[in-house]
Length: 521
Image (cartoon, rainbow, N blue to C red; front, side, top):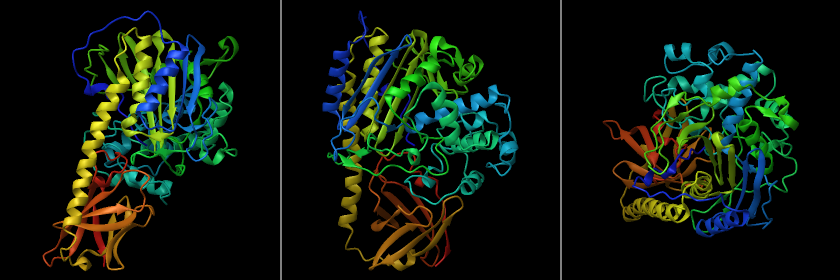
């Protein structure tokens, strides 16, 4: 799942003037802000809700669920919330801790004996909190290639076996590097402790009690898809409908589908410290568990933008944590192909809002700019023109990325007449965690295909030296890659290293973590 930076405003590190505003935006003003953002960013549809002082003060849908159907988005339209699902996983574990069925410091191997990390010490000491805090020592998004693109054949056993082969990039528990795979392991812990699947636990123990009656822990659980937002891609300049993303194993890292009407209940239960219902007489989780979820477990670099005067930043359990203008901020983003989301809470002023979109606009520019604009109004800050600033920044970012990729394919075209002995590259290659891939000839052209990830299949074009550019048949996301061959003394390829071509490639396409070695001709 994509991770969008906790604060994409870091590129505005400049001296700012501040001016107080007397009140938050009215409903008409928010409508105008959203519609202006829709005109600046190529987004098919969005839904937004704001909760303040225990009440839903704004809730509305814009645009369409699909450019094919043109059905309008409404407050009950379901979107994939992607990594915003992580907080549901940590809340589920909080319920089990409250019930005395596990402790945060329990070792993962005590519940999943086959769990094995990259060295014995880490395996022995890896606890439940370590699954959730992105401080494992492994690199950003490592292993996500098992699930990006979707439709792969990797199993829980494959996932559990993979961690021992990953190379750490930092010492255990010392550095933040965002991780999805360990949340899937957390989902399996929930299943083994509770005796029900992660999906069933989320549905029965969280959705049902707090009234999230139209939310689903899995795409497969949605029988009526008439009000389901379709994912879209806008990179080509024209909105293209994408297939729904299929979660594998469990959805603990990003599998939930929900709507802004239901998510107001989710915001309220957190802002009410675990309490819900009439007069807040019911408790989903204890204040003690909320304190642990909202406690800094992994320290991150503080946002230097003087606009918000922040002093701390880090990750709790399923939430990013920071301070803005003297107020605690609790937030998370989510992203899957064609689906982006943002959740923000400012507990000190009893504020929460959620933005759901069904388009992979570049860098989450829509939800970031609209979210910052809404937040600023409640913090008493002037209108900073976030929408225009994000549009300018991300247009330049996209242009720069396009220049890089265009230059690569221009080189491919210029070198297309060079005679290359393709046979010396063909064969079966294997990576310890990703499995086997085959490089083969198809109609006298070189092709790449993965055994366990069928969508990673495409023609290999000679680039230069012993490097080829792969154009995947899968084009739902910008993921074309380089394959760099290493030859033996006879000029025969023995190893492949890979990396994404575009500088804007999603980090979940972690081709650079592969170490493919020849196993047969």
